[in-house]
Length: 495
Image (cartoon, rainbow, N blue to C red):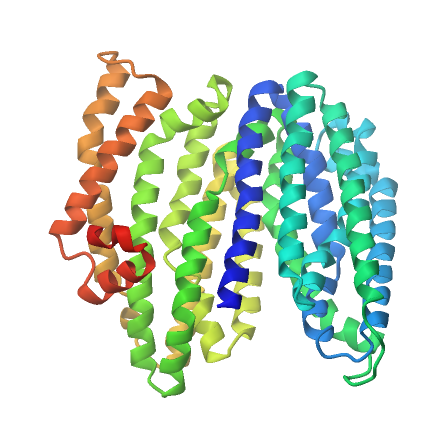
């Protein structure tokens, strides 16, 4: 029970930050010029890549070593010193290569702001060990309280200067100062935690060499992933200008709720999958996985079809007329939702073949970067989201082929293709109801406004999809039973 409560608390805290970032993106897009917004994104891009590319896996090492070592005080103090040293080196590196960064991102406005990127990296790198330190010491509520306070603070630190001044430099200075206060608070709490421990020598001895031996391979993997994650934005920046990046970023946005649904369903199924595999019953495990995949599709597929169809009203409704170019980018990027019916690595983790994850990720991220460069040259800005969707497909089929091979199951049986087809048809059917509204808006017969149109479409789509799902066998009885388990008691009658 304690684990479940902690999981909910941490998830809510992280979700609140993502929602805040999404809301801020709407505000910034409306109050700043596209060039200034692109510059804001560049400052954040430099800092984020620097932070997660050079922490060397140290936060992950805390989870592994802190509970085991008998030298807990020494471990906390040495780890805090290491991470602060890394922060100093990284911030200095950003400053030294500032000219190259300005040229790479094709943004002269960064020349006067590069010190802020360096400052953000310096202040945020020590914060990366905060979560792992507090969770490893059982102080989850303290972490959630501290994190929630700073999530709220982050929102207002961006909001207030944006509304009052609209000056990009002032906004970023406020943000940098805020991160400085956060780092001071984090280091203060870590120092307090360190002196709560005594080096009682009851656990394993602490070895700096052992910590780096464990952490650095993870850090290298994270660095590759982080560079690939921002690769499309770097390529867009280098090829175009800050204003184009602003448009691209608003089109290539993720929906936090969909990721939460995806991960939650797989995590809920994990214990049952493990039990099935322990009994050496691969078929039973795959059958259970098929249930979770079909269930996830029941959320993901309608989300895709609705977002794709409503994009011409949703994007300008959120960001204004100036961002209409982001509509097609959002529609292409949203195609990736069709693949997100599982985390896929859930099966790899169950069977203990985690090495597959690194291999598939490396191949897909390489394809993403190369594909982005080629497709952007061929099709302009549209090529970047297309390359992202293509690399996502590589990940999915890579996992499916690997799982099929490891479990000795034919590829056509490794996935519930027919069930997914049924769910897809059920999710696409309500578009027939939405088409007349879109047509009437286009010819001017009705004028509901962007949000009025989205609201009416959402109501009609949801009602039609519910009727279709109730009347067709897209989900079998086991999947419906699983869905009922996830719903609050008052809403179980819906399924």
